[in-house]
Image (cartoon, rainbow, N blue to C red; front, side, top):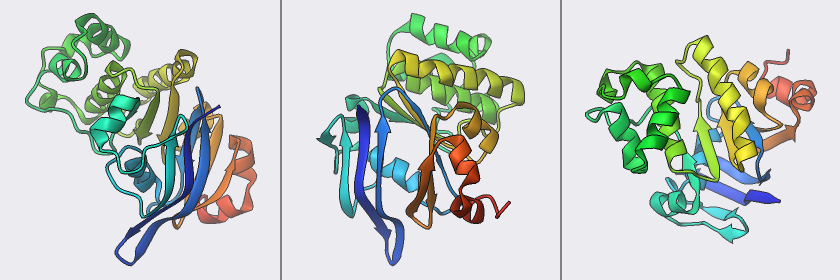
Length: 229
């Protein structure tokens, strides 16, 4: 069953077409990688699916229901959540206060902080955390909302290798909890390690979809994204 579908989605910014008639289906309880060169339309797709931008054409469906034109808070309540490429934590609130904004469940908040190794910093102001720690905090704040679909925009950027390995293990566990992950990443090692399928965008169009091995062997992808290697 598909939890999220894009049907002929188009988005223009003035005379620039950021997404051009893109269609794709995302199965329930899977991890999908969304890749492509800078400017290919990845973040635009995330913004459309989470209500931060409006479509100029096509449809987006969540569990078979159109979500076109809904505000981000409405989409979030439906069960679609996201992180951002540039972190958006509440810098003047403590780490645990950031989590309690999403849910008042203090036990869950402390359990998640322990999971990502931030429990000792629960009373620290979020603005004092390193960039990588803020990325982790934003991720667990999303989990506090218990969403069905999670968009992760560059989730491992700025995080040290040891924490990254731990983060990937947690990502892999989420489909068993009924969650679907869509990961936007430039780090192909991360994509290949955890994604069951990959969609490749280039100049706003979907040029390939398949398993990591199929994508590695795709000539269009090699030319557009991997430099022809």
